[in-house]
Amino acid sequence: MRIQVLGSAAGGGFPQWNCNHPNSRRARENAANARPRTQSSIAVSNDGERWFLFNASPDLRQQINDNPILHPKHGLRHSPIQGAVLTNADVDHVTGLLTLRESQPLTVYGTRRVQGVLADNRIFNVLNPQFVKREVLTLDRPTGLRHADGSASGIVVVPFSVPGKVALWLEDATKGASFGSVEEDTVALEVRDGEGRTRFYYIPGCASMPAPLREHLRNAPLVLFDGTLWTDDEIVKGGVGVKTGQRMGHMSVNEPDPAIGSIAAFRDLGVGRKIFIHINTTNPILLEDSPERAACAAAGWEVSYDGMEITI
Ligand code: MLT
Ligand code: MN
Image (tube, rainbow, N blue to C red):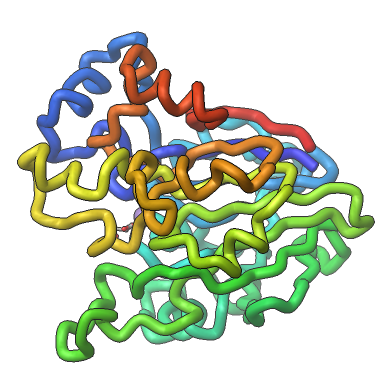
């Protein structure tokens, strides 16, 4: 199975359009050690020709242009993109669907909750329903991804609920501290090949690490995990916003409490390869010469970048 990182930054990208934080500034200056990044998404393929997007970022058009694996190959209208699997309904994960207009056959996979959000918003009808199928993912049930022609791809996803939050644009302040979040709002994906030879986890958003999730991930060969922030209060302390990681539904890389700190949470889990993705513009691990990046590496973590290729 092949995995290609299309976008390694969190919502807003790196640099973020309105951000003048020193990190964003360095990325804008094209500093060699502050490589710009587009918004969170990977592509996955079992045959190297037909690909599934895992989340569809607002930068999808640029990501397609930047990644020849996603260029049209045959005839006048063609795309290697066979479908998109959604882990939530956040802006950075669904708005790329609008780029996939209009009459190109593909399948959009998401939980009933996420499918409901798409169905309630008529702008997603630019995905012509005559060509674009919408398939509901059931929690904890393996679903085989199908190519646009209906054939099996050999890629199986198992969505499971992780601590998280309803999409920012759907928050309901009348519903208390959870803002009306439900279990299906944020899922992780276990991704397997159909023959059971290989598997990995894709978890771009996760608010905490309860014991059952730890056990689920124990000894996994590969995990791509939420790397939004270095510390929970980084946005507040950096003076660029008022929200903590916990308020946004994200663990932080370097919090010492293993319930909300990723390096601490994974320390004894025996995971073969650990890679941060969905990294916010304020996170110092984006700077290749920072002590925080070195600390990440020392803890056995990689920091993903756009165009990163992984074969498992
Ligand atoms: C998040 O990951 O917290 C969201 O993408 C935030 C947003 O929608 O901007
Ligand atoms: Mn996000």
